[in-house]
Image (cartoon, rainbow, N blue to C red; front, side, top):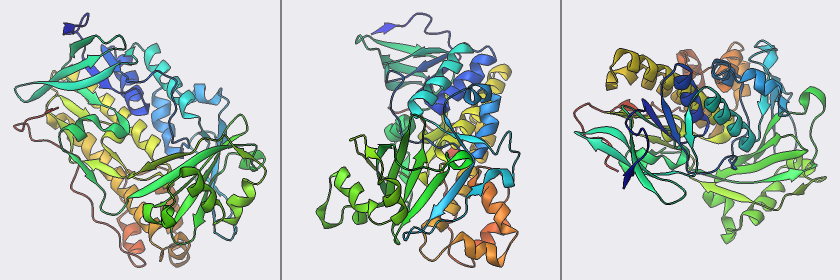
Length: 429
């Protein structure tokens, strides 16, 4: 065991270099704090989750990323469309019918390997130190407080690095939550996804080229269809595991090809293209952490909670949480106070956003529900539904929820994500 150079001089350690880690690192480094990002993989690396929703604009603007994205070759996204199993297609829901066309209403379909690299480079440019191919083994604790981490680099050297605050931005791995027994599953949202990438499949033209399509599978789930640059399209199906593996089918390619036949629009779109040959599968999307913070530790992005891919909220929540926690840690460092009380507002904002989006996800998966029914009875509800689906999740939607409950039940807020009591032990990993 050795100490890394300057191991005592960091002000923040960040586990993971994805969107939440890169966001918080960029903000803290921009303020002049010494930040160390430890990333297990070598960037660029593959990752699913390619569609940005309108309210990613605000955190991306704060990070200085909007000019870079406008100069990129990512496909511009202006709308979302829903398609029934028989191929009947709704009119596109154009974001510019509600938001400013030159800012919030125009977003992107990104290739995550490239987008995440851009985000990490942005953090580096602002002064963050990044060590890739470095595995965090455990959290270091003293007196019940996390004081740093033990890590191993690609050469096999193991060392300790310390800081007054550690941010867990480890994504689906949920480093701290898993090791401390905080990870909880959603009581209902337990879907699996199977996906691949097609080249030269059909897509819209002009302003509709980058349209995200949600195409339904009868009573069971849905396809995503996300056009990307270089003539590629991300396409996948999400449903209950028992449904997708019916008849004992377990091979991802067989599952995918069988489900294509369940939606006429998807079948037509993929009729002219060809799969790249790789098929991916993942299960049990939805999860959350009992605590969002412990002494010396804060959970950010997917490490805190992940809902479901249906409304593409994952990157928005990762960017939003990285932005919020970066500002909170900066204020705490300036005040010399990183007590858990510093993260109460962060926790409340993140939980409110997640629970608002979660209610829409629950409604979506109820076979008895359609957004059209709500809007026909309450025409002014359409704007509120659009706002929440677009990522404007931190406001009071009580009226909307009461209206939706006239059609289907909605879940109560889950009692999770609060800061841990100061007196409790933290970082048992």
